[in-house]
Length: 340
View 1 (cartoon, helix red, strand yellow):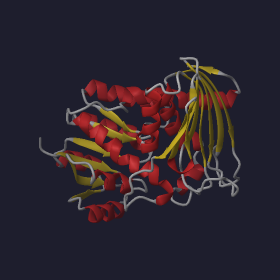
View 2 (view 1 turned 135 degrees about the horizontal axis):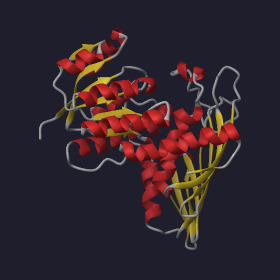
View 3 (view 1 turned 45 degrees about the vertical axis):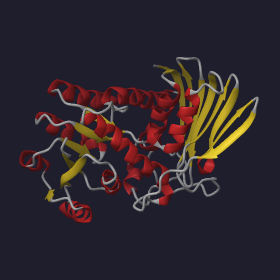
View 4 (view 1 turned 120 degrees about the horizontal axis):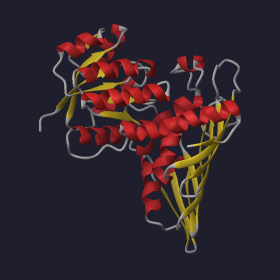
């Protein structure tokens, strides 16, 4: 099969890493890039050898012969660009979060369903190599049935340096990072029945929450807690971005610890092994593990578009993660437990 031709919509901070990751995935080639600020698109096009540059998305879609589009703009514009692509019967890969609200995300999914095209979500967090290893070990049942787990990302990294717009968001930490963790939680353990969430704003120069605590009960009876923090507190233990996980089972426990260590403890003792991410020269070391996972996520989504596999993060699946996100904000606003 020939390479699939695609257009990149958006040339912001994350687009450079998304496009760089495509270079490691055979079977797709970017042929055009759009950005409302043309200079940004021109810079990325020159860097990655993309032949066509546009500052008009409609003109791009009307002119170029494409097999799909990769939307990497801010989520306020995801619905508009998805509708443009669907009107031309083009499958869509869309950056997370899929939309600013669950209602808008559902409308995007319906637009693509009605047009008969695929809507896939670039949700790369679950593709991190240490998280995939954690899932592999969980599926062996070596620790028995999991009964309780905790997930956390608490970092002193200043995300606002590269993405200053985050400071002005009403929905900050959960919408930017928490959606990743909620999706990973579902990937590892299953679906949620109830949750309670408490959000805190620590830094005075941000509008939304920069710390969050979530308690969840899963449909399989598991109890799960999530702790998130990007409040730039200088005593935080991590100055990179990594998800830590601890799982208790009926016959043992397992942990995804700092520096990518996976430890499994049973009656036979503890086995520990590092599972660091693949190193790419274009990746920022602070975000190394998450940026490396972009490559594997691309490969999974492309296999679906080429009819060679099944995407994990379809719109239908991602809507379940967005339902959790919406429930978190509802719980934080009311102080009440929310049933899913």
